[in-house]
Amino acid sequence: MPDTTPNNNKSYSSNATHQSTYGRNLMTYIQNKIPGMSVVDANDQNLNPKYRIFAETGLRRSQALAKNSVSQSNDFNNNGIYGSKVQDKSFEHVMYASLNENKGARLRDYRVMAAYSDVADALDEICDESINTDESGSDVSITYRNTDLTATDKKVLDEEFSKFQNFFDLKTKGWQYFRQLLVEGELFFELIVHENHVEEGVLGAVNIPTELIDPVYSNIQNLTVKGFLYKKPIFDSNDPKKTERFEYIPLDENQIVYINSGLMDENRNYVLPFLENARRSYRQLSLIEDAIVIYRLVRAPERLVFNVDVGNMPAPKAEGYLKKLIANYWSTKTFDIDQADVVRKFNPQSMLDAFWFPKRTGSEGSSVTQLQGGQNLGELADLMYFIKKLYRSLKVPTSRLDPADAVKDGSEILREELKFARFIIRQQQRFAAGIKRGFITHLKLKGMWKKFSLSEPGLEIAFNVPTNFYEVRESQKLEMKTKAFQDVTVSEFVSKTYAQKKYLGWKDIDILANREFLRKDAELVWELEQIKANGPGWKEAVLAQDLAPEGGAGGMGPDMGGGPPPGGGAGPGGTPPPFTGGPPDVGGEAPGAGGPPEAPPPG
Image 1 (cartoon, rainbow, N blue to C red):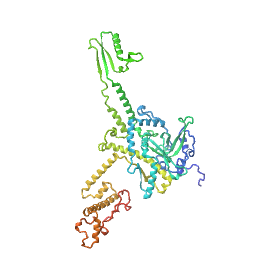
Image 2 (image 1 turned 90 degrees about the horizontal axis):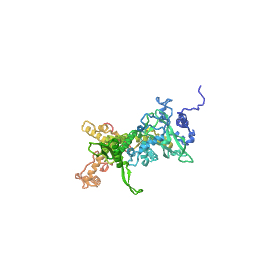
Image 3 (image 1 turned 30 degrees about the vertical axis):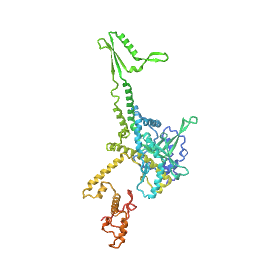
Image 4 (image 1 turned 90 degrees about the vertical axis):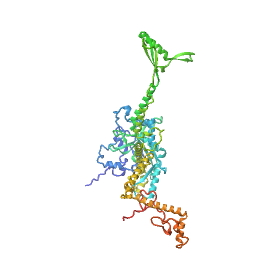
């Protein structure tokens, strides 16, 4: 007999709404998971009136994968984590500076590091390479893969993406965002929508301070984000500078564009910025700089050694005599306005400049010698070692250390620059992944996701790659491929078409396009020959020859030069066929749609 009892505890995955964080009240979830958590109001809808809008849209792929995974779907992994951390003090405090439990204090420490001159210069090098504008004035582009979109559909989507990426104002603020990602490790952007006009999609994006928001994870093994918790500060009405309390506001995972560095601490509790890799080098560099300054201050003065002949004086009398001389040496004569006379005043600098030693009878008498200052005050090899170590820890080529160095062609330092370019591309990919997720939410809100039958793998968003040494490497790779192609095709037993596919990596459509352009190039060469031989009016001369009676005076004799165009002769009226070559950009276009012709059948 079937069970007719009403089920009030529906499964979390029963529908789209219950799959969302709204289906299992995020505030109640956090309250139950975090000991001692005090929440002002557990009603998600009251705290965040736009919660349901985002809870019913966006992507749930990561949650669905975790739910159906054998290795990750268990009670232990489904315990949420939020800001929990047991401080590890096993490292030496000064050099390694154990992570602070408080997120705000942790971020302040990183910001102090980022303000250090050498660290700031290295971060500037990274950020300068992260934003690159192409010829069309765009910093980021979108491509569509494995879709049946028409040219009109792509144009509509391109316009939507252009509008969406302008919300982030990458041209003016992109440099700042990449620096924030390197220093703080996280970026949070709230997507703004209008409650009464949801169909308009996202209207803007607002950057949220990192210390005021945290992700809430539903799975501690793969760090699946369940939502976000914003700590809204409530200021004291009597003292606006004082924060009275925090109001915790839940935000759906699709309401926030979340970008992180991908680095975690050893316990996988904290997201660490990339700057953490330079912490030890930064500490060492700051200490060695202080040590060098102190050493120079102490060792810089040249000291005097006084060997005073005390004859046969008894020890107490010799000591008193020496002190008298020292007192006279330590004091200097100066004019005192109050006393209106020359007086002796104590000179503390003289204490660092001289040494006094008594000498007995039989010695060479009193003498004054000079001790040289520090011999290696100009040696900065140790300091430069730690500066280069700091740059290496931040993946910045050490060749960029001295701004006075001239820019080289890349052949000598290509490997270091190539590694740097790949690091930049990795940072760009993490930023692009966040923008992609936000753009998908925008398309779903506008109903364009279903309209165009889009899928997440079908969209690819990428920043323009660094152009300095990355393009040099690509040029070298092309040069190597071309040389291999030329070496192989010298033999008549190797097909050039096969070599184009094997060694140049061309596709069939590229080979067909190349053949078509070779034909057009040959036609152009033939036409130029006619112009040189018969002048600009060669076409009229050919037409007149066709219209004149055979053997007439108006015909074009053999002395007119030229001949029929290669590969097929003249068209109607004796004129060459019109230029019908495919467009220059044929990559990815299907044959027959304005591109190169179809390949001829075998045989």
